[in-house]
Image 1 (cartoon, rainbow, N blue to C red):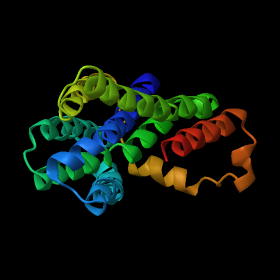
Image 2 (cartoon, one colour):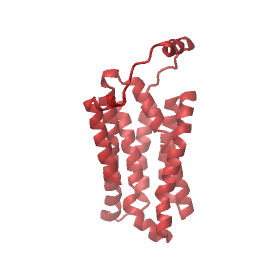
Image 3 (cartoon, one colour):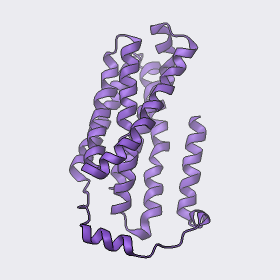
Image 4 (cartoon, rainbow, N blue to C red):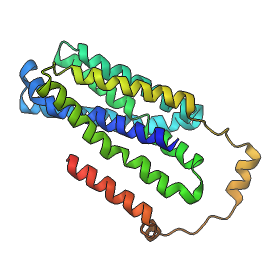
Length: 225
């Protein structure tokens, strides 16, 4: 499960960063101003963040795996469809739908991994899963740059190429990820009645693996920005 969720974050970030090396080509093909070019990323993240909370709510109601897997299949479909976009409006719509489909991953993934990973390994498991973001950034940049600059493909082809591993990862999630059955009302009542453990903000910095996860994610986001 940790491996699949790791690959999920690789795919998420590769799907985002595949855009960056080809933005000048998109600007030229569609005759975009710098403002319009900047809208591409802004609208993507607007769709991504907007869908995260509804995806979390739906995951709690109808199943986290169901929401996550369906979102990942849609992710593969939408990003592949960008390869046939013939206008800037169509490109933006498909790119926003790609962002929205990615929004279905974050909440359900962390809920499922928190359920499945033994407590003593939870920080290490989360660190490994989160490190997929860094690998995804590297993959997206390299795939796009290599295809367009080295092999002279159309700027649309990296979107189609990255859709293939995304679809494979979605299939792996469908087949191998198991979701625990929801707790009964009696079990939920007992859990609610149990005394809560004391927790301090500084406890987050007392675990070596968790601190390493913070550093890894910070470095990847800093490098990306």
